[in-house]
Amino acid sequence: MFYREAGDFKVSYADDSQTFPIKFDRYRYYVVLAVAFGIIPFLINDYWANAILLPFLIYSIAAIGLNILVGYCGQVSLGTGGFMAVGAYAVYKFMTAFPEVSMFVHVLLAGGVTALVCVAFGLPSLRIKGFYLAVATLAAQFFLVWLFNRVPWFYNYSASGQINAPERDVFGIVITGPNAPAWATYFFCLIFLTFCAIVARNLTRGTTGRTWMAIRDMDIAAEIIGVNPLKAKLTAFAVSGFLIGISGALFFSVYLGAVEVGEAFGINKSFLVLFMVIIGGLGSIFGSFAGAAFLVLLPVVLKVLGVDVMGWPTDIVAHFQLVIVGGLIVFFLIAEPHGLAQLWRVAKEKLRLWPFPH
Image (tube, rainbow, N blue to C red; front, side, top):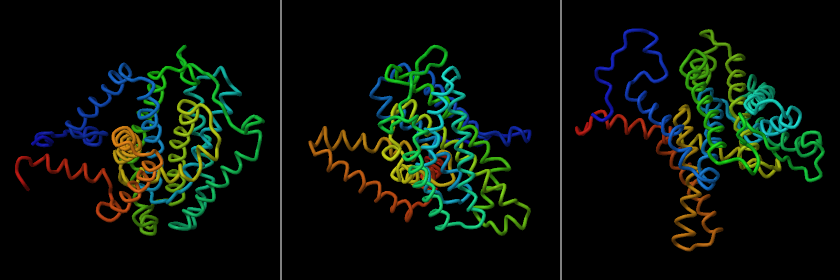
């Protein structure tokens, strides 16, 4: 009874195929956007932005990108960290070469460069799949990290080998560098997350998303009924790379400000984003948000409970975090393979019938 669909009729194909066809979902979406854009920017400080909100926004974009590739198209990838590094180094080169161009353009161009690189490394998916494709993308991860470490042109011949984001502004408001206010960096990342989520949602609900899911479920049968596997797989790699590149560009320029590729974009980053997708739910845009929120909030909650409340050493709490994440991944793979998104679907089914038990 809380989650109502009764009486929500559609009288045209356009109404029936809109992004949120159920009125309750649509209103909930408007409320979330109103809170995100109209309330949170006036309440946050540097701690909330750097500890929770910015990581959540950026990792959500990366999780959506990986979910399109793994969850919707069924192409296993372990190269997310390397592709984020491509976005970071691309936006760095654009920021230093064209300082007068808007940061919005720089980030979008970095996403485009990452999409091209991702398509190039996605070519083996036309001949291999499953474990072998995972190994190929893992090789891409190590190759890209090695490339950015060994070729000085990428970090502008800096003696330290690091890249540092120069201070840039949008409409006179600084969004990169140490002087950027928390609300401005939050707004900048939120705009990109909203854009990426709307694009991903519409793509996955349309013809393109259906071809991805056909390839995921049974590629031979999909090819027999007319789906072009070359186009489907490479478009999935391109869209995934575009979103992951945007997340890498924001991760470097807005969130960290200075990175060393091995530390910031190593194999741990690839596994972290993959765990977000697994825990949140494969093949679900909402699952990407849920998984990112869970793995961003988990260290903060453990630190507050373990270190501040119970007085445990920080290294013990860090080990507990690894144990909890590993245990949850095993639990979700066994008990609920579709993750937190499926739990939300079950909750909605219960709310449809409440207070009746069945």
